[in-house]
Amino acid sequence: MLGAPSPQLLLDQLESLLTQVKERHGVRVSLARFISVLAQYPCISRCLHELTPNGDREPVDVFYLERHDFLVRLLVNKLMIRLRKEGIKAEIRSELKTKSGTGDVDIIPENPSNFRIRIEVKGGQGVGIDQNLRYVAENSVLILCLAGRGEALLVNRNKIRELLSDYLENLIDRAKLLLDGADEKSPGPWCAGCPLECPHARKKSSHKPDLEKEFLAQTKNWLKAINKTVELAVKILKEAEKTSQRKKEIIQESGEVAGENS
Image (tube, rainbow, N blue to C red):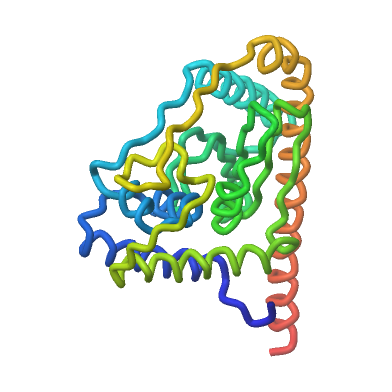
């Protein structure tokens, strides 16, 4: 997709459309929530309900919240110790709110200062594709700490640029449908849990955590994933610092040469 708009530009367009949707429909949501709803529900009627103040948010089982909080704390503690040992000066923040959403862990180094690593922690087997596309559109680097799988994955924006651009452009078109007053109903799996008066709406099946499978059996993978995430973050930070230092040296050398030739 040659000549496609940059992801940041597309995010700016979505933010502009959100401002218009707020004025038209009385919506009060963040850009991240706006993007999430547009992506999650193909049904425009359901989207509008989820975005308005009376929209109901599905509760999350306390087990998953506790597991996630534990994994984030463990990762932050290990990162703090490892970066200090490596002599890498960086700020580690959790719950940092940006345009694309609130990050689990963000690493902001002193050098280069315009660089940021966002780490998304997943306790189960899923990867959260919609959420990751949002994050990689805005952040320098995205690392997935797949605790349930015992893996860490670097998401390179260049490798998914075509998908990312098309994804954001599609969301822009869907946001325009909201502005135009579209109210088409599109039945599908996303009808589960829909509160609208609609013949397609149906109850969402309840799910209780299987503590044997989702807790005890997976704990052996948690440290694997977190340690791999730490190693990957350290490697990327060192490479970014070297690149930044090399750019400074080139600029300095160019200035010296220009001075000699003047």
